[in-house]
Image 1 (cartoon, rainbow, N blue to C red):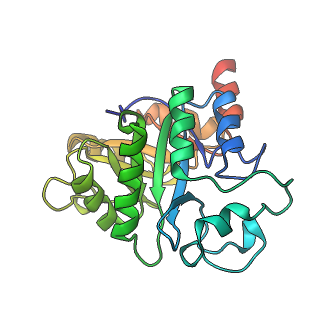
Image 2: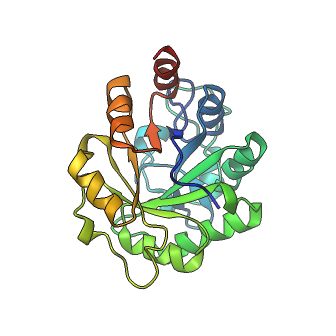
Image 3: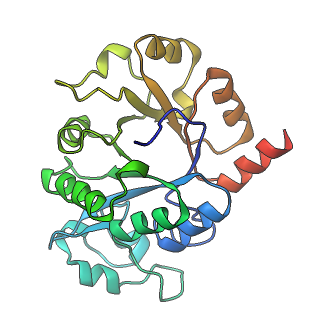
Length: 244
């Protein structure tokens, strides 16, 4: 099982300074830059494939109108990224999990959905993890706390974190039944502060943060005893640690 309390640096959507976000070259660049793992966003295509893509709309990244959920996998895979050479494609989740296995890396999979994460997506993501036999290096994330509970039921051995843009009150993050068994939350680094982290720890929760992009924030989280950090600036962060 993934150890969620480690002081790992995770590449947010890979390393988008070297390649389009959420692509295999971006994930490879983050790992080559020293990241312990990568975070990716997933959506379900019209024909039931789990592809790695952040936005609801394809306009910003692929330059064409539409939504992933209304398109087929083949159409999405045939598209090219705006401002990048042809040849870099939208990957399947399987592709990312296989890369992580080859590189002995961690993968945090964030499930996306508007207005809600579908059960079909949750089941397809769990099936991808089972198919690639990568459950020991995977964690699930979602801003949809209903999805967190659903994922715990579908894959109880895989850690799953509720995502927060703010510092949640400790009493507000208990899920139904056994869904909080891993007791893991991931919040914006800007929200992390001493009283909140202490209150969560007293209740047995493990804390991670996203938006950790500079040495000052990294040092502040060290002082708070927060381990896992998700960053858009992996190389910068790790260079700062080596220089300290």
